[in-house]
Amino acid sequence: MSAVVLVEGDSDKAALETLAKRLGRDLEAEAVSIVSMGGASSLADFMNQVLGSTSPGTTLAGLCDEAEAPQFCRALKSVGLGSDLSISDMESLGFFVCVRDLEDELIRSLGTGAIEGILTEQGELRRFRKFQNQPHWRGEPIDRQFHRFTGIKSGRKIRYGRILVEALDLTRIPGPLEGVLAST
Image (cartoon, rainbow, N blue to C red; front, side, top):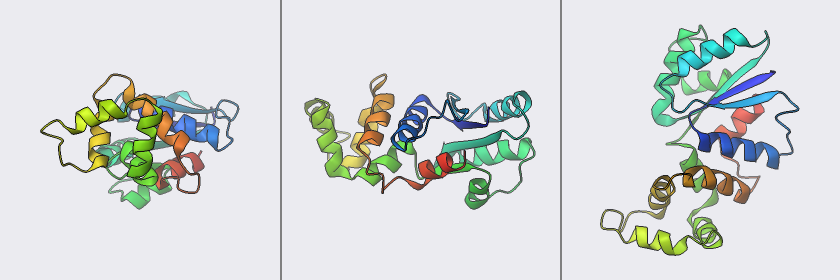
């Protein structure tokens, strides 16, 4: 293995794999593995496992949500990769932080007009309108509504992770996604 990229969940993995493919990369041929950890709580264990089971010179990288950055910093410290790390320090180690989370990065990059177009293409605009009309979500910004909408049905977040990356203008790739792939 030449590189291991640790991500919090399956939607992050799906989005990065889709983006790599769109950029003409063959991660398998490059021996780059994207590992979904099922959340950030066992990050230090994953790091120790990767560092202990891969050949010397294997690149370790990662992508996390803003809320999980402190946990990533603690895990990096626990495996001897720094202490009191800033976001910039994390990036120099190959670990990138999404503002809010990956989906938020993609939504901002695409814009809300594109989101409605994607929902139309996916045949889910009617369901989304029904969701928007729920008392709690009525009047909320469309980006927040869409973000929540993708998370309420099993598998939808993973599917939309791929779909949003497919719709992405490659000149507007969110920095954390571009950074983590460039570090491998």
